[in-house]
Length: 105
Image 1 (cartoon, rainbow, N blue to C red):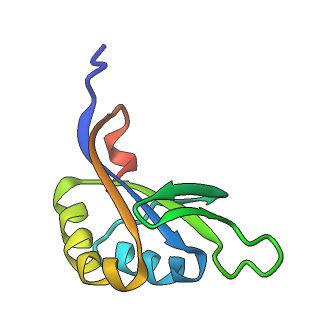
Image 2: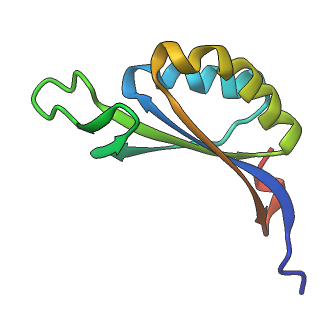
């Protein structure tokens, strides 16, 4: 049995929740059909500490996670780069091996 799998690119984007539909549209534009949105409650980075405003959700952040073929991920990231600074997004990418590569376009 081959436990190596096939290489894909894992994309994680820390983003304000209202921007998720725009990111999903970008994913779909590049043929990336699967994603997961996870709540993110607090953190600390170059801008200091932050936490979710549970009353107004004015700064409600989520993490959008997707796994895709490297070429599709590269196209998505090329379109995402111009938005990073203006929306304060944090993007992490890594190479991963998946055991069912047909599930990740």
